[in-house]
Amino acid sequence: MALEKLNIVALVVILGLWNGFGVAQQVPCYFIFGDSLVDDGNNNQLNSLAKANYLPYGIDFNAGPTGRFSNGKTTVDVIAELLGFNGYIQPYAQARGRDILKGVNYASAAAGIREETGQQLGGRISFSGQVQNYQRTVSQVVNILGDENTAANYLGKCIYSIGLGSNDYLNNYFMPLVYSSSRRYTPQQYADVLLQAYAQQIRTLYNYGARKIALFGVGQIGCSPNALASNSPDGRTCVERINSANQLFNNGLRSLVDQLNNQLQDARFTYINVYGIFQDIISNPSSYGFRVTNAGCCGVGRNNGQITCLPLQAPCRNRREYLFWDAFHPTEAGNTIIGRRAYNAQSASDAYPFDINHLAQI
Image (cartoon, rainbow, N blue to C red; front, side, top):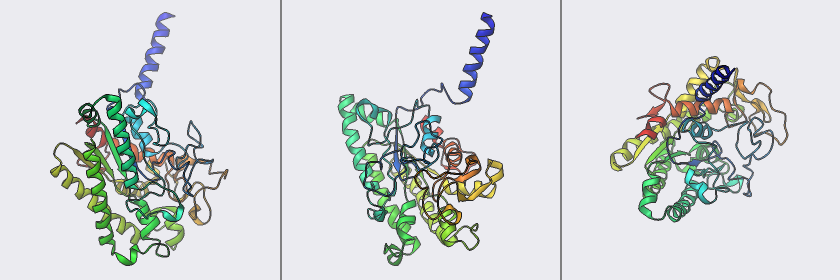
C-alpha cells in the first residue's frame, strides 16, 4: 500500500512537471508594455470605451472577467507560465508593495505609440505613459532593495516585453474620418515615424534598467474579423493594404533589434514575428485545431466583426475551434500558440535572433 501511494505521488509529480507546474522561475521579474492584446485590468478604472471587465470576457479564465480581452489567458499570461512564475503579472493599477518585484503589466487597451492614437475611445495609457509608470515603479524598487546599484542588477535579469503598434493602424492610420495621419504620411513614412518614437521610449527603458527586451511585431490586422467585415468582399480574403502597411512597421522593428543590439552592447533585444505566426495559423488552421479563422466567437454583425462582445452576450460554445474571440482579439487557444512560439520558437522565423527562453538564459 505504501509503495502504491509512493508511485501515485511520483506520477503526480511527473504530470505536474509535464504540464509546466513546478518549473523553476527563470527570471526574477517580468515587465509588460502593450495594448488590449495584453491588458489585464489597467483600463478598468479609466473613463474609456475600451474595457473588457464584463462577461463573456474571461468566461474561461479562473478569475472570471478581469479586463483581459479574451475568453481566457493572454499571450503574456502564457509566457509568464512558461517562465515559471507562480501566478500572473499584476496590472499597474493593482500592483502594490513588494509585489512589484515580480514585475508589472502596464498595458492599456486602445494605447498606441502615438499620443493621439485611440483618443476616440476615451481614456488609455499611451506607450510614453506606460514608460512613465515604469519609471515610478523603478523608484519603488530602489526603495525596496535599498540602493540604485542593487536595483539595476536586479532589473537587468528581468524579461521585458513590448507589443504596441496595432492601434496606431486600427485606431489612427486606417481611420481617415477621425485622424489625419493617412493624409500626412505614406505607409512607409508612417512606419518610420512610429519606429522613431518607439525607439525613443525603448532607450528610456534602457536608462532605467531594462536589459532583456522582446519586441512583439504587429499581427495580421488585415485578417481580423473587423477588417474582413469592413473591407473584404467575401469576408474571408485578408485586406492587403492593411497587412502590407503592418509589414513595413514589422520590417523596421526587426531592423531596430539589430541596431539596438549593436549600440547597447550590455542589452539583448529580440523580435517576435507575430505576423508570421498568424500567417502560419491562418494557412494551416486544422493543424492547430481551428475550424473558424475569419469570425469572432462573439460580437456583432458580419463576421462578428463590427464591434467587441456585448455585455452578457452568449459566445460560441466551441471556443477552442476559433482563432478570434471578438472583432480584434484572439481566443485563449490563439494566444497560447503565439505565447508558446514566442517562448520556444517553432520555426526559425518565429523569433530573431532568439526566442524568449534563450533571452531568459542570457
